[in-house]
Picture 1: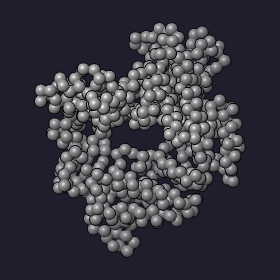
Picture 2: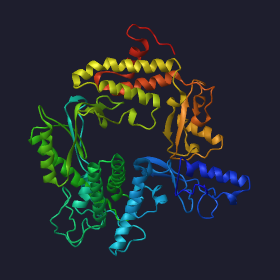
Picture 3: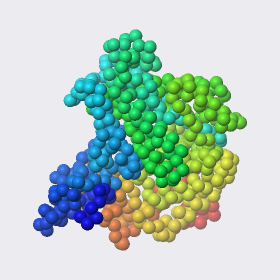
Picture 4: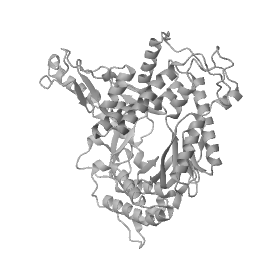
Length: 544
């Protein structure tokens, strides 16, 4: 380290394992004072804290304690959101824009980073910052709550396959509404503008016209910078420079994505529930106006969710969709863009209730050949690589279709792909690493009352001396041993050896379930796929 003298140290697990382990080994061997990895003469020490588990948007996450190298920047790729999503250029952009040290920005949540920018804006404007938030939600009657406390507007998807559907969505809809409508904690229902000309739809809340809120001020900076980076990216001819601009605008996008939710967060210094509610009201009004304008032009709404619409119209050209987008953008003051037109798109029903549509479960192919999927196994982090690859290959076969008729004719070919994966699995030719399942723990291993598979694997690690906390992800393999005892049917990934064999039947079921998920609108279920794939059309059984 002294010889190379790097400015930035990039590790995989430096916070959670690598540096604590080195510090522990140095202590055991009585050389702690010689373990200096920074530029300053500060020895590396094992942190006393084990990191923290926290709850966000319905999930539990784990953040390891930060390991600093004084005089150098240490980035742990396993303990950073911004770096993993937008690389080093995105991390630098966020750190500079929001005034957060680079090593701290790498480990901070987007909400914390955005809060730093808001605090900076308040200091610039000479506004007194409260030590603790003290603005409660304003009083509402039961009827007012019923009207006010609603989310974005939703149009249920029409389950099944559709031809030539175009997807249109608003560019940064919520942050744009917050900026253009001057929505901030101090501007909603202000006492200085009771007769304001700007009112919140449905609710009638007045919005301040005499001063610009802190939240809109900070958002304008992000919106303008992101727009500039996107323009520079599109104009750049050098591919490396294009990538730099794309990473920077991508990092700023995450701030814009988070700003709406953070507005209603209880600890947000410049947030308030009433402001959060106002944004939802403006968004509903915007989407409803868009739908009315689309229907007046003869478009059918196939699906709609908050800031996106899926529209179709017989014999409509792309210029017809572009004309609609232009008219809507001028009317509502938020840019509406064409995401693309699909050759075909399949909206999927619920896995547990086949007749019930699900808002964000679909897959389709654009005219350009690009495949888009949401809510299925290939998008889930806990899907084994084998199941992921099988579903991808099936979709690639179906993507050859130009319309629904060709799609239906290709289903048999997609099932042949599934059959090959099942045979490979039954023949024992699948590497164990392709079958690992990753699950996030919602509690500490000792707090579970039921022996679910990820908890069994976590307890195996704890028994071997590994610290496992709520929010951490555990990888495991389902084995074919101990069929009568579930605790013996799981092996943590770190404890695998050559004597372990996977549970063929269980993984075959996962394969068939993923295929049934894709083809459920066309009458396929896990059970009839089992009969078709395992027994085959000639009733020749695959043994496993």
